[in-house]
Length: 429
Image (cartoon, rainbow, N blue to C red; front, side):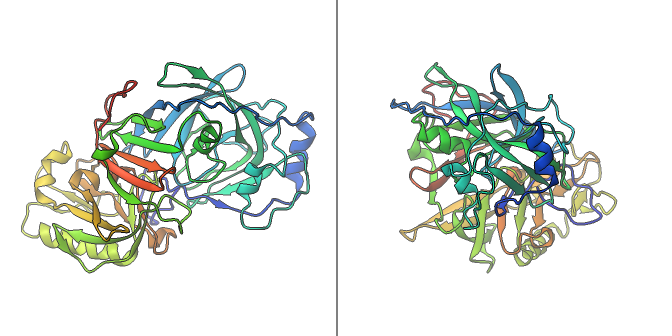
């Protein structure tokens, strides 16, 4: 969840970077919750299925603009109930707003989740993974307290529980594994808040839903998504839906917690810009793409230089995003303006010194605002607290398949048809 430049009304910009704090000390909100929570035995999932992995495909809903987020529907619990979760590859933990009871919750599309009597104990490996900073104190051995904070100032506080996730696989089988998730009974809305039931954390950590499914032998630890520029798309877990030889791959940086292809060089219209060593990460929880201040200002200068003499001028009255341009008449789609804008790229060097490029055509960095102007969906990351980190957000991942292969520690992308759900055994690229 990203904080935007003050004075600009940005709809639903999400930069969901997970900052996990230390083990939470006892306080009033924990005590209030514990009094209301029915005590009982803690159960651990003992399900381990040795089988040929298949995949899970889930439809996505939402768009970059005007919604500013993509979400997925998951059926959780017994009896199973639907919940809308924001899809976030920038964080690990999946959590739901939880009536346990709720100390502070925000508006949600469905009734708050009510946990069964199935707490995750403090010494559980998943709990320990959430407190990897070495300050993991078990003040209450029978439960695992968590607190997550996001870059827009939002947060969720609660305890880990286990419950059934009702999932359909491409093998045409249905499984209901017992997985750990957060019962969030104290939420603080961030600057980019919108009504949600919770967050689907798809990061690299042990608490990620896909990591848990992989440990049970149900899918390989591979995540992919295809975000349609028309809205919607799909999310998948597993590796049997694409032809790996058609994907542009680059190694996943082992030194970065998030999905990072490492350092990049910025090129513009095929030419070097001088901006190199840009630490980059992919984040489906970010509506827009963020460059550090120097690269951002450099890109702005190049774009404005190319637009000089063209029939476009800055739309100072449009506050949708920090920089918008208007034409002689309102634009209806990116097709109306793409001829004025160049393609730029981020180039990643892999271990063999060969380069893999991620191109940004105008469709990957512009939106058409409600006023009919073309607005730049590349923002200054330094201004919103990302320092030198550069984030590739949803706008730049539209209409291509992006794959996070945790098994082989690589990230890949390829053009894809995101408007149709892939069927079993079919390739999506």
